[in-house]
Length: 134
Image (tube, rainbow, N blue to C red; front, side):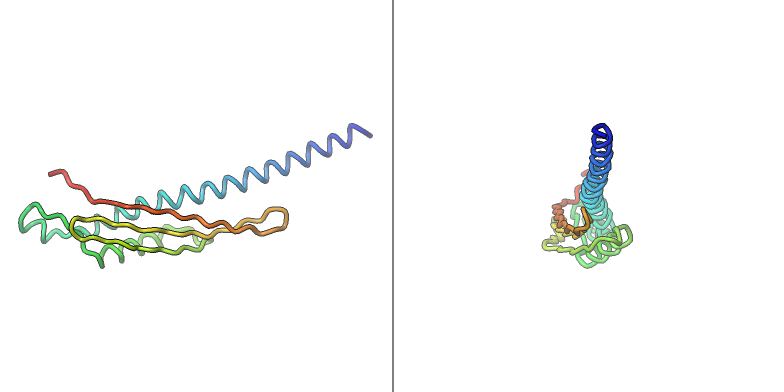
């Protein structure tokens, strides 16, 4: 009888620990996925917004178009974002010359632990500069 209680305890603890590991892995993957998505999307949107006309005029001026950057960033981010999360995008600094972008993405996600829903808020911020090889 004593051994059966220990067996039940070990099996219950194992199931609880495995559930906790899956939950923490999901939370960690959400944060890492958001950072990589923001970094890659910002880089691609800055390349899309590159103003070739001003660069062709003098060969030295590197600038981006603000409206094209915002449109491209939001379109690319929406195509690759996880639909189960809620996102809030704040683009608070876009310099056309020299090309610099600062933005913040807030993510809300939730998980269930022991029949209780827990909400998590992640904030990823990035400052990007478009560089060239001149």
